Amino acid sequence: MARKARAIGWGRQRLAELFVIGATCGVASTAAVSLLSSQAVDVKRLAVIESDSASSFPNSSWRESAALRSGHRYGVRLEFHGAPADTLDWLGSLDVVLRSTDEADARPVRRFLAPFLRHVICLSASCGSGGVFAAFGDLGVLPGADEIRGDSVEVSVERSTSLVAVTRAPVRIDNFQLGATLGVTVPLNGDSGVGAVQRAGLNGRLQLSQLKGCSVVTGCKSFVLALPRVVLRVLAPHSRLFAGPFLMEGDFLLTVAQVDTNRVAIQQRTFEQAAEGYIRIEFPLIDFGGPLSLRAFRQGGFVTLRNRPPYWEQSYTGLRFGIDAVDVSGRQSYIEIAWGRSDNLNTRGRRRRSVVQLRVPSTEFVFQFVVNNGGRDNPVILSIFTPLDLKDIRDIILGKGKGAP
Image (tube, rainbow, N blue to C red):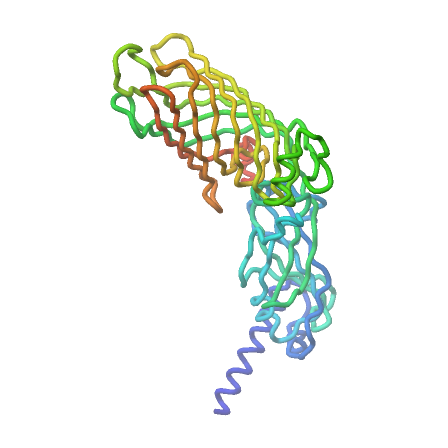
């Protein structure tokens, strides 16, 4: 038993020595003896950090972030006094939580379970029990407004149910994004023509304004708004009318579309490779106080098919019920119903187009179902794609890594 106790004691001392060696402070190894004291860890500060090159794990070369931007990679640095024998166990028991600061939606956005903090270094001349140390962790790429609500985020370090440290950082919202989409499009009810084809597109999204609107409880005094105001006060008292981003979007896609090959007889559904382009305006109607929103839109554009006349016109007006918060990334989940016309389809009159778009959580993938009703031909199309920011593509080409500031 005595031999076993000596072995355990030697193991704890060796672990403490390795901790100091990893701190790279340049002091003698005798300082390791002081790590065996029972001094408690005293947290000094917590900071969010970033780097021009996001390819490495966060370290001492990363600088503190004055403001955060969605789509960029960040880390955390926890500075603390003291180095007791159980420092490694203490660091290994800490969770890091990223929260939205919006009062109506202050849920944790991401939780990084222990062990999270590593790469410990010494910041002071003395690396004994009274020294100052820093531990680093990787927060990854900051989510967009579809996950983060409000104009700032809160990063907290927690141990079990107790709060160890917390910091808050402002978030800069991008008002413009030039992007692309890559994926596949599959017609689900085609009788002839092409099957699955590659989907590729270029798009630009501009936030023209951030409308504040009016509260259904204290504002919106207009007689015209009396009925919706009363209904919303009962069902969603935190709602605001005409609040949210006012957006303009342009999109050009290589995809598939159905062609009307015979306008007299009942035809087969024939799909062919197509190019589509449109310009769209979105106006906020109701912000329900969380990620949910109702928006109105108007879009117009064209579709052209291979070996067919130059182009057909398309135009739709409709409503979009958003499940995620709205921003310029185009990754939101939503349900959309619109009325209008697509001249490439049978029955050129008024048609109804329904769209369901679902973002896969914690991934870049998006599923989109489109159903166009109103004639003998009612095409159903499934698309699976991922939106890309052209700045990320540029950073990858230049070797900076996705998410580099």
